[in-house]
View (cartoon, one colour):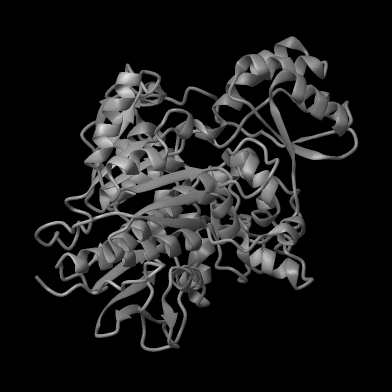
Length: 580
């Protein structure tokens, strides 16, 4: 067996302590995210060197990382256009829109850190991984994987895909998000504001499905009802109904309260971990490891999905009768296409966590696992006797991973769901240029990025366990995802600069038969609607500008060579890493 690339260090407190980070002389698209996270994990930066990012131990034998744009794209704007991000984010407005934040690039940066950590784990087990490559285009496809799966399903969406959606505005100008998972609470809130009963009834389904469709065509009467009351009255109505409301915060407000915490927290505990046997395959760095996942919705299931793509054996814990989201339309071969996008390939075990006998069975399963991952509501694990102290008593080498909304970092925070965290952290400003009103994206930005950070945290925990023999608790959150995404904008706010992008930033250009996206800071000097898409792109190429057509129908991506179909016939995006 080859010597580990990361030899154990007795008193190490971070997974990359003692490793040297060499950044490329010419930084690439995601290098700022990669170097920031690697430094937080303990790597020491030794200055620019070579073409690619690399990590090496005291004796050499490093691993390199490269981030590429992909097949069509040349920058963030063109990636968003080519992968369908503009199409999904723009559904609320009814036309494609670019995210003003560097979303695909940020995701690619986190995926690159994942690849490096997974590569180090594989090398420690004797595999000859020497490099990892991530394309920003593949990161973009991963970000829209659930929407792509729905576009390739056998049936239509269960809710209308049409312009419209939150946020709402009160009579005194407070822009706010509303959240509830209960139809009765939804109806009680709107009744308290005097909304017409028919509008309340018709508004529930688009509100309930907005996480799936990235739009919510409400009756206008609901917006009118919100505008008929001052903010204090809106808050009283929410409190009495059992819903939650959150006024949109600015980036400047978030910058002022930002605590500087990393996007995850690693807490080691005592253990007696013994490494696995023979070397894993290069393309399966986590082969031989078992992950128990008790996740719901997107954040934890996506984190476990990525661990499975890296070779881990993922066992999904589902309630009696199975996960109800398996039946969420649209379906492929009778199974929800969206559910398959996050859960294909996982084994499933039904466990009634309300039953003492089943909780005992779950603890026995965790005693033989390497990772236990969940995103239950705050306090639920402790109440059930399934918190890290409980499970580590039987398995002190366990990596216990909790992906939450707020990570207990913001007292008095609202419900920790994607759109509420967007509202509370200034994401609504960061993702829209200054000529668009601040509004959270209805694309599940933070659920996806939070899932990526959850995977990164688990890999860091596994590497720390490998080096120290200590089991680890790892915490990640949607708040951490928001802070990573908005870091450049918050930095501008701290410097007294306008944190928002200028008017029209990343707005695609309409043509006679579609839309084109230009690279950031490029411009088409005349009205593109006089030209067809092909003519406009040819005109740009002749002048050295690499524009791309904007994908407006995700079904158009289904014939891409990089997409495949799973056993149910559902579209599957490729793994985001290439190891060699």
